[in-house]
Image 1 (cartoon, protein in one colour):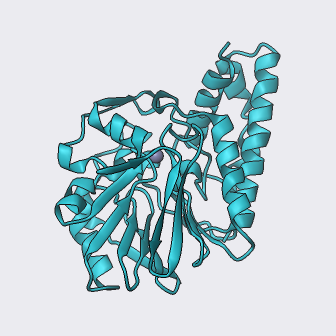
Image 2 (image 1 turned 180 degrees about the vertical axis):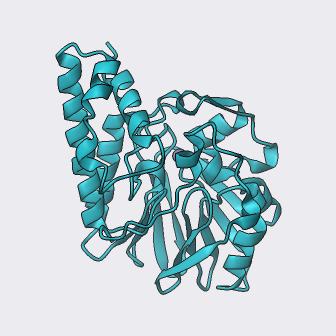
Amino acid sequence: MPSCRVFVVSGLFLAASARLPAQNFDTIQIRTQALVQGLYMLQGAGGNIGLAVGDDAVFVVDDQYAPLTPKILAAIGAVTPKPVRFVVNTHWHFDHTGGNENMGKAGALLVAHENVRRRMSAGQFIEALNRQEPAAPPDALPVVTFTAGLTFHINGDSVVVAHVPPAHTDGDAIVFFTKANVIHMGDLFQSAGLPFVDLSSGGSIHGIISAAEAGIAMANAQTKIIPGHGPLADRARLQAYRDMVVALRDRMRAEIAAGKTLEQVQAARITADYERDWPGGQGSHDRFVRLAYQELSRR
Ligand SMILES: [Zn+2]
């Protein structure tokens, strides 16, 4: 998959550029990609959706934006006549939880880390995006929350939902379909760009690295890995991402140790080597540098 340069610029990539016009969901199509028997990736706008179907339950990972729910349910309906029983959120961001209220009202049980519920319950300001998110309506909140993780025993599989230490936010989870050998990484992994470390939601670049390592440890060479954004990936791509983030963290540390200002580090273009293979969305490299400087220059 590293050779594939086509990716969806959406969600937090798009939101990073405040002057872009508001997103028109009318034109969004949901594309369904079959991964293995009973497992799919759905792409529309916002975070990639994982879908598992089988004898026991329709199980969904993340649900994009509320206006897309009818299209998402239609795409699921093309795969199975059964209703959605579970929705797991990989983290609280609006482009991954926007469909929660609709999905919950349609009968799905909403599940997420306790910090997802805590942040959605109150208004949140995402400093890096200069974006104010209002408190979510009560029906959009996760009904079941976990701290370390939990396992779903459904469809002949064991679906492990594992919280990781603060990384993209402080409520991230990796979802591992152990028998199907499919992993959904949420925004811990962008398969076509640099990570977004949401410091105002408790994120940390160190956590991004250790979460990538956790995903690598779960995977083998055949594992299909769904990133939060970007095309379907594999362990080699996740390894390359982890190595890139380590290299960039070390470069940033060296720049800070040399007493450079943010403006000087920006001028040094320390991410330039990665612009071809990890282009990301508009402004995402600038944002990465700004946030890495902010975090790593803390005393
Ligand atoms: Zn996110």
